[in-house]
Image (tube, one colour):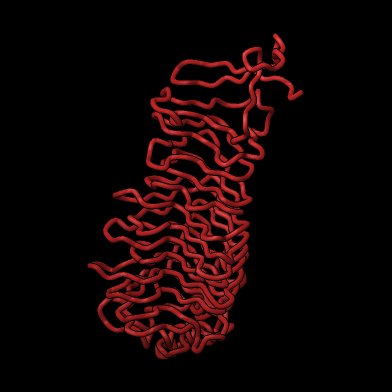
Length: 431
């Protein structure tokens, strides 16, 4: 029988002399093999949040990329005084670490010059916290098939902040974000040529500063999908901003709340076309959008202010209230719109579809099978407190107008409410 001495066990390869088995029919291996499956970042760096761990983190990332090991920060806080550049075309899995960024940034970037591709990397619970103002947290250029899981970008305290949390540009395709959070940045996500990317439950909050926006499509972007967003801050502009050459981007559900005073608008399309907003709930905004244009919008919740739909898109409202009791509180439209449930215009302000509407589809049903259109007060002056569909020129009817008398029995009635009073309006065939 061979014996292993204490000196042999204490040697660098001592763990390779000790057998290890997970149990339950697992393959036998050595302790060394089991330990080397995960690379500890703390084996390289101090991780106390005070020492400069920049070079140690660089060495650890290079080692993990070369060996294919998972790099685990074990919850440590690693202070960085320079940009961390990731290896090119090398899958890297980095998890459970907080990096305190103590330089002007960017914090994490591509390997070197623009054009070196980062691919198939996974970042799980990797938090970037600004110790002083930093331009960009994650600078993503030529990043493909990467994913961020429960990653946070914010501040380490004081007034420090990032200019942009995630900057995706220069052909960033097929990336995925799971529950990413942004605490204190001028922008959450800035997308330029970043396509076919998925965002699941992204969150951006800022209770002390005034960020510009949560999502900015600043260049050609298409095929991105956002699910269950939560953006809450005192945004200085529209939290969701589209550029003119952005198409086929979709937001599904969530809320966009402006803290403090009301903001100008919750979404700015800026000429973008063929984008979709489904089930959005803007809170504390004067307008929903400056122009909907050739986009699809389905809105839930209470909407104060005006809606301008100046393109060939559709605006859908479902089971909610449109509050027109604000300056300019009207819906302007040039195309087909669909409304389901209740539409309310409070006070004596106009609730008008202007100019003429080619088709008004109430709940996708015939005009006699719709929800209720309500005016909460009677008109107090000419031109107010009215509901107008189209702007065609009328003609005199009946004996008083010198025309043939209308039939005694109309085809049906439209019911409009003025205050609590129901008014029935008969309708007939055109001929």
